[in-house]
Length: 78
Image (cartoon, rainbow, N blue to C red):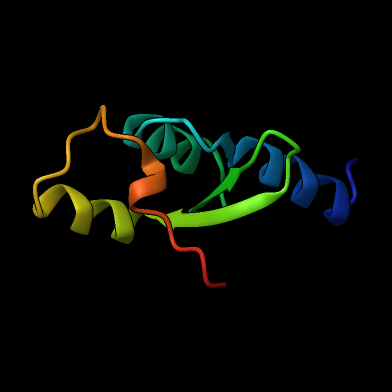
């Protein structure tokens, strides 16, 4: 049986995407993780932003497209 820390690390990995990913890829990352948040990482795998389904929903309602880069809608203060 996996420890709680192992499960958490696996979920963080599932919820992590590159900073050049699209909004669609961010939604897919949120969907495959139980954390309900997406971690956007720079090329050195450092977290440079986060996005929730609510952040993405607001972006789409304001006219964003699923193909748009998530970096324009991520939160950078966390």
